[in-house]
Amino acid sequence: MRATSLLRAVLGLEHTRVTGFELTETALVVDVAPTSKVAVCGGCGCRARHVYDARERRWRHLDFAGVEVLLRYRLRRVDCHRCGVTTELVPWAEPAVGFTREFEDVVAFLAQRMDKTSICQLMGIGWETVGRIIERVVARRGSANPLDGLTHVGIDELSYRRHHQYVTVVTDLLRGRVVWVSPGKNADTVRRFFDELGSERGAQLELVAIDMSGAYIQAVREKASHATLVFDRFHVQRLAHDALDAVRRQQVRELRTDAPDAAKILKRTRFALQKNPWNLTQPEHERLALVQQHNQPLYRAYLLKETLADILDHRQPNVARRRLTEWCGWAARSRLEPFRKVAATVMTHIEGILGYVATRWSTAISEGLNGKIRTITRRSYGFHDVSNLIAMIFLCCSGITIALPRKVPRMPELRLSPS
Ligand SMILES: [Zn+2]
View (cartoon, rainbow, N blue to C red):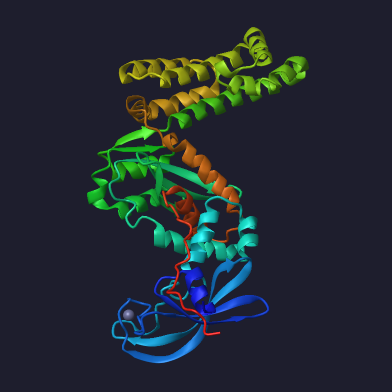
């Protein structure tokens, strides 16, 4: 078998001939050419009649047994009747890209699973290159119309780069996948989503789950007034958790001078107070009992937090409405300023909270997805551009599956060498 035939069989590139090779000090350079003689325009894919000139170009391909493989070809400049003068399209790579599609697919496959340093070491490329490759693979392999057929969506904000910057993430709650991501977290960001969705697809929306941020509420009310607005239950509970902690800190401050020992005990109750009662350890139970005996305001705050969680477990909106209203009255009379504020917020947003009770939908349906995105954000540290991060979120959370280029060598017709 001739070496070029062997290379062709092993590389297995579609519509590609192998015409020669050279072993340099650093790489195996394989001369290739498209099987079709007619040049194709890189802009529109049409056949191009006129060829101007050609210049040698190289494309990085997958390593062969640890040896770097480069494809070499004299790329032609063509005159297309639509696009003017462009370069021709080759079967093994995207226009103006120095890597083969198979190489890029492997990088993307790894990026779905691996940290950046390992990818860079394994593939022998820089991190910024990884970012650009991911963007191209997402454009190539991602859903062409991710916003089609949406009925239940969750809108969440996500901080990145040490919490100074935000992206807004829209999730298809039924399919559990990300469908839209954009920098920013204000009303305009959400309006942009609805504008891209358009009125026809927007009319199909049945439910929008958000956290209680004013910016999101305003935009959703404007743009999807027909859809049921649901507030994330965990966000509602987080308000109570924060209020409870504010009360605890206030009590510690007040006791510090008069009763330092009592203050010390309260300091150690933070986790016991925040936890679900059924998860408490024995020492935590004992700490809570101490709070109950010695600090009435803090214990009241604890009961308020627990009762709110209990109300949100209800499944009948009528019962939940009555109990939520009672809860707000109790919180307002509690003489605990943080809880009076929570009560005011709950009363203002009661319809959306009951929306959760009636439908049980929450942005946290995609809780697993959120965790995944957070991991990605950490792994993507050092991406210079937010577009890299967005591409990474799509790569990992929008249902893109990448098949590895595993194949059996395609045997050419057997040709016995003359010697
Ligand atoms: Zn063209």
